[in-house]
Structures are given as structure tokens and as C-alpha cells.
Image (cartoon, rainbow, N blue to C red):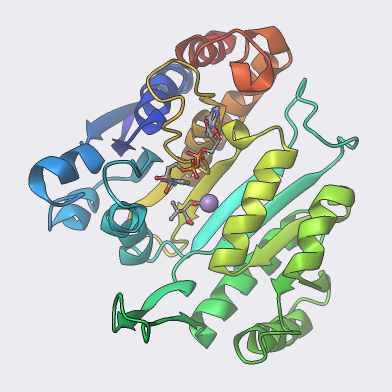
Length: 349
Ligand code: NAD
Ligand code: IPM
Ligand code: MN
């Protein structure tokens, strides 16, 4: 029987609640399909930071490297550790360190979930650049606290990274409806974003079967709400993708549903799977967190590991449970708990 080794990083707040809960359906589907998941839990978190002064050990990436995949909950506890410290100490170094350059986020309504829009027919796959752009980390502050203070944060766009993320988008579009939306803000940002549009056009010539539309990010933000059914694969830079996928989460019924796969398609390192949402300190530890985003991310993980049938099983089980709304968590108007929803999904398998 094949065993997959999964590194668990529950992290902070509801990250702990949802990862713990997601293990039950994950183990159940592994049983059903004849493979095993062996887990190693890492306590890397803001709590660890308060005790040791760092979010993860110095050799953290080396400890993760031998695993087949990483399942992460959420990172951040802003009342105790500044968000820039916690995120630059754990989540972002994993994305960048393993060059997990594709951040894939599906947005569609599950059965029984109506969402806030009048429309129900949409199926958007956001492909977010995950290693550079506005998140490059290049910059600094001088004259801190002075009236002459200056802060600079430089977005970096390289041909290598822009081309590989767009190419990934074109390939995905080919396997879906054949439509690709490329997102920029090239009316205002005349270097990086015009460059992105140029690379989009170059690649479009290689993919004559894909219908490409370039949108400005402000326009596509509105379109995701007014005409989401006109979009399929959406490729965006790191920051634009971050913001658009919270809109995607909102239209699919809330952050409790939005899943995220951080992938290095070249392999050789563990890819990382996580919900889009954060640690939600307002509801942490209360059994109120919707575990579905994390269980959906676990399904993305199984698909990535080559267990497509098990991944489909998990999505079907989630769908059977969402069809009966009163059993869901309070964010969907239900009376279920984090654990009861995850157990229902495990039972639906
Ligand atoms: P958040 O996603 O944690 O919460 C936003 C709102 O959505 C809150 O009202 C919360 O209760 C609700 N919510 C989120 N997930 C939910 C779920 N599964 N079920 C039900 N309700 C849910 O965003 P925030 O408040 O901006 O950030 C809180 C902390 O999380 C910060 O430290 C932030 O930096 C961090 N964060 C981390 C990640 C990550 O680790 N990937 C992502 C986003 C934010
Ligand atoms: C996300 C989060 C992170 C991001 C934060 C916590 C750094 O918002 O995964 O969407 O901006 O990438
Ligand atoms: Mn985000």
C-alpha cells in the first residue's frame, strides 16, 4: 500500500481547527482508495515565535523538503505578532523557497450554496503568480519616524516568471473552455504591466486555440461580480491575484469555501495546500470555522499526488454535505461545527 508523507502546519487561530478537522475525511478517502497518509505535524506559529523568537526553525525548509506535500492552516495572530513578521517568517518563505510559482484557486458554487450573487453559473480558476511581482520583498525604509521618511517597495517582474505563469494559464485554459483572461493595470503601470501584456501576446501566438482577453484589474474585479460566468481561467500577478481571489471567495459563498494550491509544477519539492482564508482570530477555537476550504485544498493535494479518483471522491462528498445547508457552519447559516461538518463529509464517503 502506498504511503504519502504529508507535513502539517496548522499554524494559528482557526488554522489549527480546520487542519485537525480535515484529517478525518482525508484519512477516510485514503482508506477507501487503498493508500495511506502519514502525517508529521510542525508547531510553527505565532505561539512558537513568542517562545523562541522565530516562526520556524532556521532549517525549516530542509525539514519540509522530504515530504510529498504540505497541508497548511493559516498563519497570523496580529494582536501578538505583527503580520509582516509572521507571514515573512513562515508562509511566504515556503512559497518562495520551494519556488511554488503557481497559486491555483478555484471559485465555483458547490451544490446547495447560493452565494451573494443572483447568478449561480460560474466556474473560475484563478492562477496567481506566487513568487515575485508586488511580493518581491525588494525595498526599504529610511529616516524612520522622521518627517523626511521614505518607504520604497519595488515590484519585480521577470520574463522567466511572467512567462511560466502565463504558460501555465494557457495550458489550463486548453483543458477547460479555451478562454483565458490576463489581468494587468497597463493603463497606469507602464513598465511591468505593459511587459506582462507583451508576454501575453507573444504566448497567445503559440496557443491559437485559446481565446485571450486582457483586462485591467479594476474592470475584472467588477466583472467577477456582474458577469462571473464570462470568465474561466484568470491569470494575475501576486497582489492582483490575492485581491481577486478574495472576491472569488466572496462570490462562492465566503472564505470558508476558497481553496488554494501552491504548486511547483517541476516537482522535486513539496507543493503546499491551504485554504485562502486566514487565522480568523474572531472565531478561533470556537468550532465555528468552516472546514470546507481546507478539505477542498486536501482534495487538490490528492489530485497533485496522482490520486485523482480519491480527489474526486472528496469533492463529491463535500458536495453531498453542502446540499443540506442546515448541517453547515454558521457562516452558511447552519448549526454545524467545524468537526461535525468534517465528520459528515467523512461519512458521505
Ligand atoms: P481572515 O480570513 O482570517 O478572516 C476574515 C473574516 O472571514 C473573519 O470575519 C473570519 O471570521 C471570516 N472567516 C475566515 N475564514 C473562515 C472560515 N473558514 N469559516 C468561517 N468564517 C471565516 O482574514 P483577516 O482577518 O484579514 O486575517 C486574520 C489573520 O490571518 C491575519 O494575521 C492575516 O495576516 C492572516 N492571514 C493569513 C493567511 C494565510 O495564512 N494564508 C491568509 C489571510 C490572512
Ligand atoms: C493569501 C494571504 C497571504 C497572501 C498573506 C497572508 C500574506 O492573503 O494567501 O491570500 O497575501 O498571499
Ligand atoms: Mn489573500
